[in-house]
Length: 188
Image (cartoon, rainbow, N blue to C red; front, side):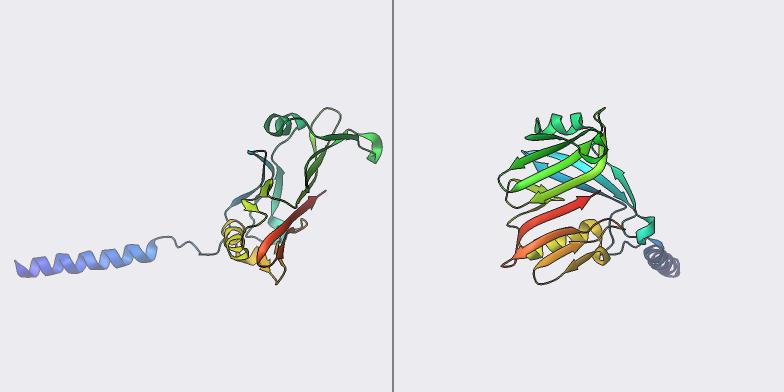
């Protein structure tokens, strides 16, 4: 009877070890498969871009538009503070939401569909980008960004955190006294 118990115990331990080795391992600093470039402003969030395969080589990163129309953004944030005719080929308008030192702008065609360009310039606590706000500590912002974009896409210097997403312009998080002092992203 003791022999049978020992055999079952040994077999159970072997199976437990085997399952531990077969379980998929998640790298600690890997990026999520899809990353959303979301701006929180006036208490509402709008996703302007979505990126797939952020952890892959730059040529494999795919960018897709989030909010596809002016109406979708207007529904969340209300009317734009500034509407200008788009000078480039006269095709549509440029919409800008501005509050103090924070400015968010994008272009749309005449039919209201959004063009690919967007400018996000956050210099005060009225808005956030990817969950990062002005005033957040450098350490906390870095940890959040590495969790979202992966360690290889986030570079930290003394006065700036840069997030590189494929061939897009990097997202800039400017630092002053170990705190985020400004956030800037531009895509065209």
